[in-house]
Length: 356
Ligand code: COI
Image (cartoon, rainbow, N blue to C red; front, side):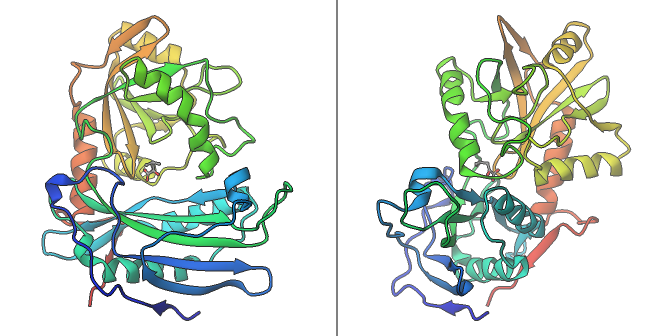
């Protein structure tokens, strides 16, 4: 398929790296592509960033038939730009699409379009430590229709946002609130798909957590309210007695790419790691008998995010000494060193973006 390119007449001004937050400003260009049953995915184009005009009856506005991905372009020390395991994002994009009846895309074509878009907006890739260009591909249902059924037409778009750390805390520990009152998703639902609906379902619980002084919610399973699932913006890891434990991908948890990278690194380093069901009671017991050493989250936006405090019912525990644990530190350093080209990449995770 052809990829048309229309460049902006006057490039926008990128703020200084020190002014960056997460997801607030966007680069000069975006990628767009449309789907109709007659033409399939077509009309691929990179054009100036701008609004998508929608009829008020557009289905995504009513029934939330929408999926997205999140990946980053990193500026390596030598000025080069690189992506981290982007083929995984493309594969997950299509998996998410199947969950909500969205037609699949050509993964290689979209990845090449993303590389081209990043190359065109290369000056938007920041270079300060912990900054990157966040890449957000999305697909939304575009039919104007109020009946409940899958849309027949779709828009795929990719936007770019220069970002700093996702949490205000940066790599400093975050405070997590565990709830058995609210649930994010349930097995058989959309939990393992990256759909807008999962994030909508997390908002109320997250607001309650925030009002109580916590950064995020740790969700439990929706049936027994005992098994730990994920944080919503990241997967979760525990270090108990020197063993790394993370909940298995049982259908209600997002298959995080950073999660997978942590597990692969653990195998590489001979750290005992298991993907197994873990209850909140096991974590609280491990804390009481002194075997809970660390908790940290993993995600594209969050990278590795140590957890210092965990609130469960009427107890609040301080994990380790409330600081950054050695395991979290090692994963963070290694993953970011690979992402930013400061270290060898023995796993073949990094994909360069060719700039003109
Ligand atoms: C990511 O880590 O890229 C996410 O999608 C999490 C959140 C910012 C929605």
